[in-house]
Image (cartoon, rainbow, N blue to C red; front, side):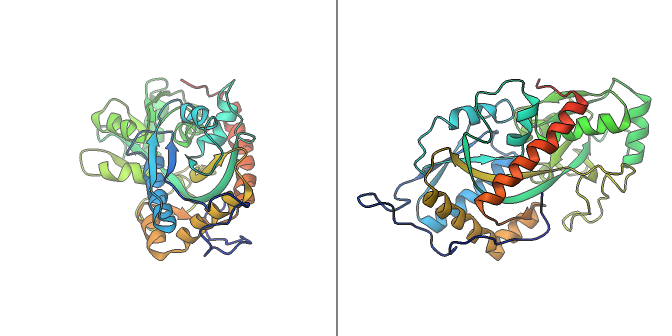
Length: 324
């Protein structure tokens, strides 16, 4: 997944925010747009979804109404969403779970490729390795030493089975050769609450959902899962620097329509998102949240999704991870 530059490989003019539809049809959009988010309010996907929703509202003059339908690593929302009209007034705000779930769940009631029309990716974000203050480790190397001395005794939370937070934990188990118990929650916010309260020993989570609790006595960050340090948290080493070569994971954020949505509507919405990502204030806000901006075409998103399905499939198969 590319996350170090903004690529504007879009053939249509990004300034065009409405499109004339066939004769007799209305211009788009002419009424509020609903955005379905498969996680609880307050989590990383919800935060990012509401950010881009506000940009779409400002650009089109139509309110974007957020609807949270949490459960089963956004599968509940996905199954619901694909039954909605393909008229441009239903958007799906997705995280990387859309690509992960293909391998994680033995049977899905939707097809991640055929039932969705990718519109635009707009950000990627790494995860953090977080521990409860009582965990006897202040560095990744100390964390590894404690884990190896306590096989089968440690547990970790995530925003749900199949999230990159969950699979980051599975990847860690594989690399250390140590069994640890995964405890899924319905979103990043409850996962962080569980960590702060001491219900779990550690967690992987994205920066937006983690920052509010990253205060003394609540949760402590040991490392970041990106390939290089974040300008937002420059003091925090990468997992690679901490002694785990090749440990790089990230999630992505993007919007999709239901299959069958007309191309001109897809291209119009893509132009809205691309224009939002070009705005300095929006990029600055993403930077504050530890996220990197992306602006590209629907075709880029389609190819990236296919790549993610293959990439995470390898982790799921190797770890034998299963939904909880």
